[in-house]
Amino acid sequence: MKGKKRGWLLGIAIMLLLLSACSNKEKSSAEDDLDLEEIEEVDTEEEPTEEPDENGSLLYKAPFTGVPSEEEYLTRPVLATINNHPHARPQSGISQADVVYEFMAEGNVTRLLALFQSELPETVGPIRSARDYFIYLSKGMDAFYVAHGYSPDAQKLLANKYVDHVNGMQYDGTLFKRSSDRKAPHNSYITGENIMAAIEKVGAPDEITKVPPFSFHESVEDAKIGESASMIVVRFSSSQDFINTFSYDTETETYNRMVNGVITSDKANEENVALSNIIVMEANHRTIDGVGRQAVDIESGGKAMLFQAGVAKELEWKNVEGFLVPTENGVPVKLVPGKTWIHIIPTYSGISKSVTYTP
Image (cartoon, rainbow, N blue to C red; front, side, top):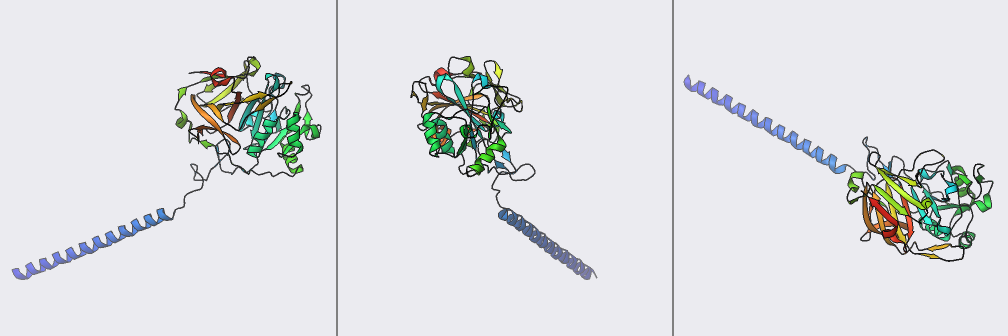
């Protein structure tokens, strides 16, 4: 009897051992299948062409500001010559410009070239006359050029259709309107709607054809490497009317602009200009006539300074396929996403004399 009982117990033990081995095998097989499914899921997942937002939607970046959007920016850039005479301030539309270029003109007066691509204001102005180096800049970026009037050299370029454009000399009172609160030549304006009408009227393309070679930081924090610079002064002349002062706001992480004690704001929407990047570029200037008109070299590059995120960086600039780009060792430097103000100052005065900044 004891032998039978011992054999019976041995049989049960063998059966339990076999069941356990079978269970482990099934569990191992299930785990193997799960790992295979996970691997296959990762392998077949496609990389997004643009960065996704927190909801998983794909984001496109505006070409001139680097600001993300769910819609792709395809509109052709518009470059408008805006009057910067004290009698023309405050200007309309400049708070919405992706980039503003400030150039010397004759008489130690500066003019603004406002580039609009991510948005087009309801009203832009006062519009002022063209210079040849304004037209060369527009041509390089393949922007639709807007001006009212021209110098002799600029007139020749426009007459030869060197760049797609509309000019108030041909459309004063139609596409361009005069405001009653200011005197000429400080009162010519054009609407965003009429800019688009002009593009259609002259048969120009209305979509972007050249993407700027700008590079952007992912966040402001990434840009905070450099010498502290919360207050910046850029002088075009000894006149207070053409000395720019920029102050960094740590809350908005942007710079405001002030000239002669007045904050730069937009007449149309009453918003202050808020800038993520301030750039100063040296370029050779040469007086070409008795009126004081300038020839400005925007091709050769030179010294530059970049202010962003409350810091300063000494750099160079290059003309890269028509775009004026800040570089370091020949490589485009990353900008903070947002709007940019670029000063083109004469080499003879130079950055060392024209620019000061404090922590």
